[in-house]
Length: 418
Image (tube, rainbow, N blue to C red; front, side, top):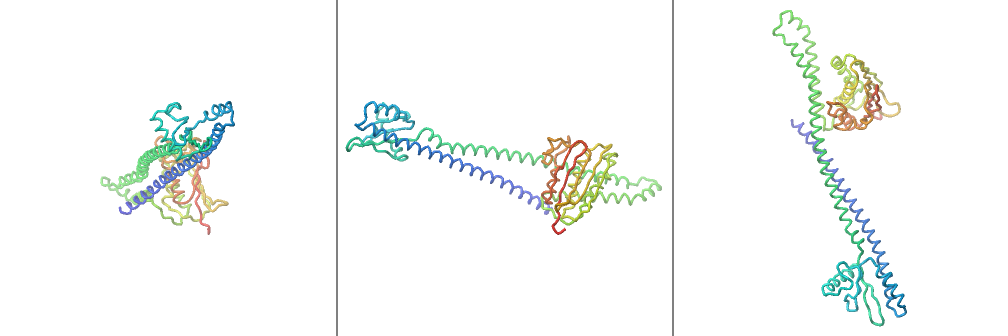
């Protein structure tokens, strides 16, 4: 029991580690995106401010020109009407005592208003303008100086707030994504646990039913002496069949015990492991369909690092899918093993002449929970992929599928010295 608890604890730690990694990745992504947004926005703001400052310098020169005695009245009017008045940023002009005397584009204050309240507000805004954008002196004659101040445009003020809006939106999407991820994960966990329970019941049901049948055969309390003698003749066979079914139960228990932990790999003959799975289903053909035929074509293979119980489970799942796909009257299931001609691996193919897998479903058949069967739980091929790819470092794929021909292909690596 302690060993099983240790395996479950290890699995939970691995799962929590992956979940934490995903959350950390999402958080890092949000931070990076936010920093990029902030950098880009403030870069645009700086460019706009530089453009505004260049504009202001021209306005100051124009204002200075308008104040000079050499400029005619028509030219002065043109400068004020077409240039200075059309400025789209806040402007305040202070006299030599730093009191507001002219202003434009100041929200809430009319250019003709000179109340004490408006003067106090303009004085505060002038201090802010000087702190942010400095001031430009305007010279009128000898010793008479005014000061030209300006503020940011509406576009710059809105852009300054943009990073905070962007970060808020990204955080909101992150929150929705995390909530959705948690809900999807819980839904998948529930589905997988239910599916595992169904798969366990299916795996255990066959040998248990068989054991119950052998027990009935051996129950001879009510038999006549001649029947008992006949039963003694078949007693050895009954015990042997019971031993096979008990071994099967032990194998099933070992398989489920290794899911979620790192399995131990040992060198095995691939043909032996595959042949055992083929023979298991061949013995069950009277129950699956008397018209179904099995072909097992063995190649000359080297031994491979395997966990025989889990690898056999993967082969059985592929064969079971083929049995469910073929016609019970004329079905053909062909299992082929061979060494790859150019790569260091062995190839196992499971082929059937069933109806084939729809094209729209072929890319999703290995996803947990996806199934094309009315009563399936969508875990068989998911387990196959996990056993082959994660536990054995191999590859499993649907080679091709069409009506009358479906081939699943497994590649297992072979050590370089072989």
